[in-house]
Every structure is written in structure tokens, then in C-alpha cells.
Image (cartoon, rainbow, N blue to C red; front, side, top):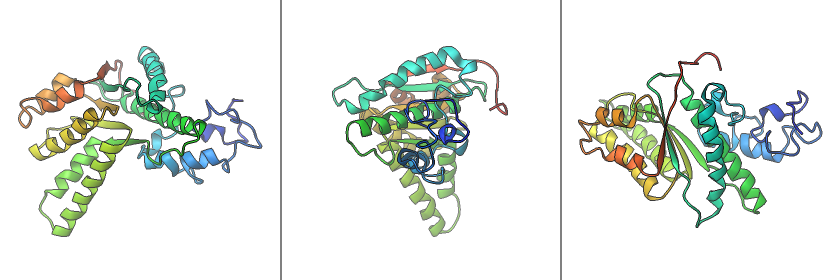
Length: 263
């Protein structure tokens, strides 16, 4: 049942396209256990909040992503890609690949699309776990802003009290652990600015760990992989980061002009 019934919780629920009870006024409410498991009773918690998805992107799926209309061919690819998410329950299946989403022009839908894919993975994990009698993980996916991580890293090494440095250091360690362990990761806004040798090491640690463990990652950037290599050349002349990113990773260039302000 579907149709975004205003008297139900359908429009707010990430499962609206897959749940047989979506739109049922007696079942599709904020008391639904699946709703609470994904979004919390308040709609601001649950597995979606644990995944650190930015608030403006927490209710997106591939079907209703605002970037879909302008990137129809790319979204056809994403639909096929999302069908591979069931492999997470098949230890001997082919690995789920990674994607590098880029465009020189900002605002073309890269972060929106990456968030939609992350939400689709959470849906696949949650529904697939329940169907198999398993308890869904609390954090099956994670969204990490590389720009925010770099700023935190810079603060940790800036002049200041030891307590402040330790606080930022602990934050970096926490984000590193989550990024390396999450079954599915979005690394958003790679290459906004040049990086120090220390921060290059942080990025390499995340990317190398995930590549070694065959964990899928969605990267977004305003630079091509060659452009990213050029940006990081002074601190990574051998191109180790880009080389690891290319492994089992499909590159998708977004076209068009900025759509910001229209979502």
C-alpha cells in the first residue's frame, strides 16, 4: 500500500517503498517498531542518526532522490548497484564494489546520491536481517565528511591546551574506528583542499583498511581521480591514496549545473 497517506507515517519512513504496511492508518504510525529501529521514536535517532547521515538527507531513497531527474542514466546504474546489497548476507559472494562520484561543478547531486545509496544499504541490511532472523546492526553504514574530519585534525595540531588537543584527538580516533569498521561508508567531499602529510596518513589508513577488508565505499569529490592525485602530490607523490581508491571502484562523473537551493 502506498500513496503517502497524510494520516499515516508513510512519508517520513525510509521503508515506505518496501513495507507492505506503508500507508495503513492502523499500522503505519510512529509506534511502529521498524520506524523506531530506523529513525527512533522522535524521528531523529535510530540507525539513520547512528550512521551520521546529515539531517537534510536522512529520508532519501533512490526512487525519490531530487538528483534523480537530472542524472537519469547514472541512477539506472545506481538501481542495478543497489541490487547487489544483498551480498552482505552471502560470505562467498562477489564483493560489493565502491563508487567514486565526481564533478568539477558543485551542486550536481553527488552528496544527495551518496546519501541515497547509504540509506538504500541500511534498508537492505535492516529488512534482510529481519527476514533471516538476525538482529540488525546498530551502525551498518556511516557517513563521514572528509572536510569536517580535516578541520578536526587541523585543530588537534594547532596551538592550544593539551586538553583541547586530546579532545580533538579522541574525536579523530572515534571517526577513524567508525569509518574503518562500517560495512558501508560514504567519504564525502574528498579533496576540498590540500592536506598535510599527517592527514594524508589518516585518509590512507581508512581507505587501505577498507580496500583490504573488501568493504564498499562511496567517495564524492569535485575533482577527478587524476585531479586528486595532483592535489595530494606534494604529500603523496607515489599516489598511494588514489591507487587504493581505484581498486574495485567505478568512477561516475556527474554532469549538469548546480541544483542547490532547489531540493
